[in-house]
Image 1 (cartoon, rainbow, N blue to C red):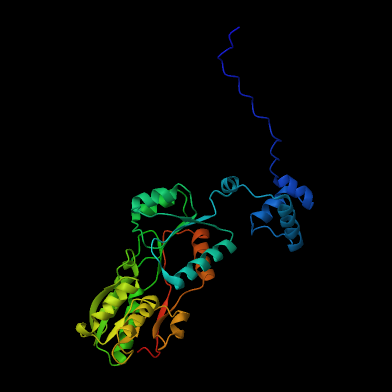
Image 2 (image 1 turned 180 degrees about the vertical axis):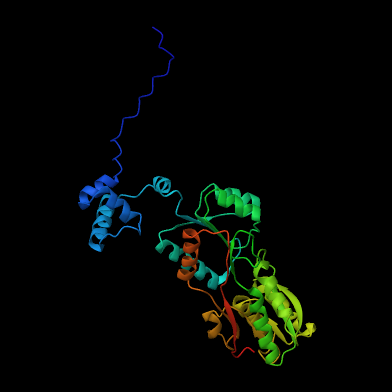
Length: 346
């Protein structure tokens, strides 16, 4: 008899063991010997209900033992809003000072029981970003200023449940709280220090890297506003080659000092000046900004503009207050103080 050409039927995969059921708040309550309401109050950090610290500890230990994690969506439905604070990721290298500040801010918000969500918004304009952010229903948005928001964008976010929109750019937005970092003051302090040290012809480094104009443009404007200083813009990329090229043509520029945007660019340029045979500060005085530790280890030690930032906990408290007490009246907070630090390079 001819053999059948039909392929054999595939065997159904063997059923594996059923997935273990996710622990519930009732399981936590039984293990801790408390009510489900107490579990909810403890794990949701309810401030209106007084619960003893031993009971809170028992509930947390039971939840950890069982691997219980509260359901964020259910929690949001009960509260009427999420606990998400949306923080768009930075598109540009902001440097160690600002990276530390943003890390502290996130830590402060977590300690206040917020969930910080970083959102990649590269390439989005204000309208696109506001709609994308609104989909996550954040209770607050902290915009770093790289995306220009409008009053319409702020209204879009608030309609989606955001109780507070906070901008950290140099220009305020109607409907949003403004956390202002005055970059002009950094440039002004740097140029004023050089003028006080007898330098009048000052080059101001403007980084070629895309996106840094958010910081470099106001720093340049601040330096230009200082009386007694003649400033010239000099562009430089954060590479050894670009620094060497600038150092090679420095003598022909007729400048006797440089505000090098920040300490990182200043250190790169100092090395290039020294390789080109220029003496610091005799031939060219150099000042940076941000007061990084490495600048104190150079020889000569780098003069700088020290930028005093608020603690992350302080800013987190401002965000928390804006969420708990939403208001149409917005506030402006100046976040930083800038002061020159004189060292050997000037």
